[in-house]
Length: 497
Ligand code: NAD
Image 1 (tube, rainbow, N blue to C red):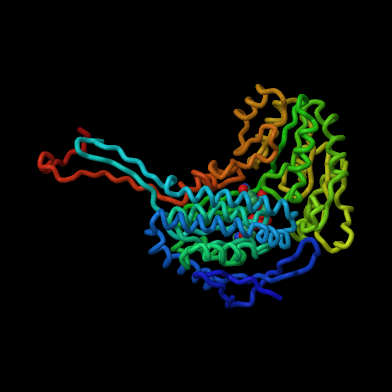
Image 2: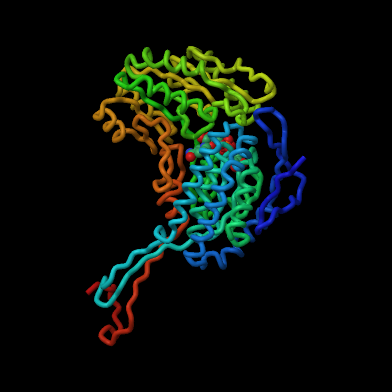
């Protein structure tokens, strides 16, 4: 069986221990590969390589960096389908969804290609007589990325293209569940002309993550994953003096007002609730129907669920694939059982689904729970599966209050035809990303992505302008050239004249 190896200093590196994790094909339920799990010496080797490469990469001209990223953009574009196929085999999401993921990641690479504009500084002439002041941004140094299973190509691309563009070197610890795509990206970066050591990959688990968090040569850590681990990364990374951004989990509410276009809202709820089997941090997991909206909306949602085709992601007819592991599938099934026990009404039960020819796959069909209430575990916790919970709110104000009481605040959406209500929602709501008649409000690469409250630990969002700020340090210069008029000792605090 193939073992997925680390990528250090421009080459695949054999593991120096016997720790491995299984990499499954979630559609068939079979182990297809194993991935090496790094120990401390392997992480140290990757960080040493990044530190060495930093000596020259931080001085590489903007033109050189742009050329490498541009070449990488071309290579990823050429290999888009191969990356998507690898992703479907290990993650399970359907091929068209995987293509969409790679495309979204590519847009961040394209944004990073504009680094010469992004890294421009500022200058003020004559801040005092014959004195000029200017500022520019310099790389942080060696930075680490730790990423989740659900977007194995895109989420790392939220990080390393920007970090590398800014002159940093990078060590990535991708998810151990679907790691193959990362190694292909590493090979493509090398082919694009990236010097050895600027981008390294250590596969692994908590052992590798903990070493990155304490390694004295790592200056900054970007993390994306679940909230308990995000909090852990933020607390430990900052305790060790590192700059940290840690994006966590989500429970995204979609509010449907009674005047909404119900066909549009039903399409959106089904697409955003069950796309990628609900394993998206921007998935809609709670549908908040206001007033009598549920009576009109729910029959339309049930009609659409009945027509959904669940199957192997490589089958072009499939619209939804399996969950990532059997263990995760069982956990999602447990939330459905708990919801029913707590008094929710199970309108559609995905637990009974069988995909012919894929009986061992980790499938769970689209599920619809009605009459869900705050306090139930299926409402309070992130399920991360194809389960849509309907909560009925008597009024707009009650819907907003419910969202504000929830600890997660990654994304939200409102569906309405009333411009005033939409405007009020976008202003009032305390959530990081907001959709108006758009269910998955993912910002473009030239904005930045991130939630509020327990969906993000740290000050800066990821990629876009905030990404450039995160991966750079500001330096301010104040400059005067010798002028006989300004000689002489003066112990006073300098005044601008
Ligand atoms: P996870 O938190 O289990 O794992 C994320 C990363 O942390 C992986 O690389 C994993 O190896 C590592 N890790 C896991 N346990 C660890 C531990 N105890 N100590 C140190 N490191 C550890 O998340 P996941 O299951 O891979 O991904 C799904 C989660 O990610 C969901 O909660 C989802 O909402 C979230 N997510 C959030 C965003 C966002 O932008 N906010 C985007 C994608 C996914």
